[in-house]
Length: 83
Image (cartoon, rainbow, N blue to C red; front, side, top):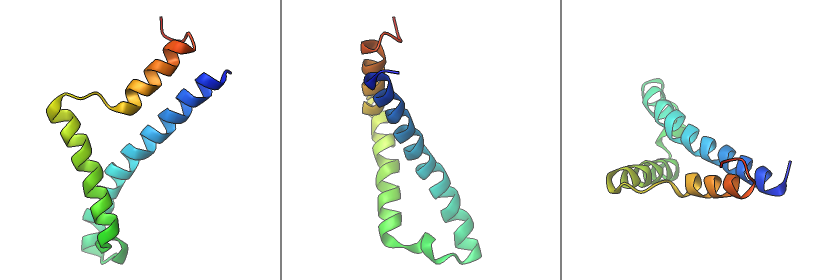
């Protein structure tokens, strides 16, 4: 495994982590609101979560490809994994 491939794989993990925070964060907020979980009302968490959602929405509206996707693809091409 080359350094380039390892870096591309790391980017995939970061990308999946970002998506998990957005998805499970929203689920936690909805469930936690009804169950009285205090962390779901944390303003810092809510602002970060909302910012992450708005960034993805902005990319979708403007037709911008995610920079993580572009970076990963470029690294995979450099590693010879994508013809």
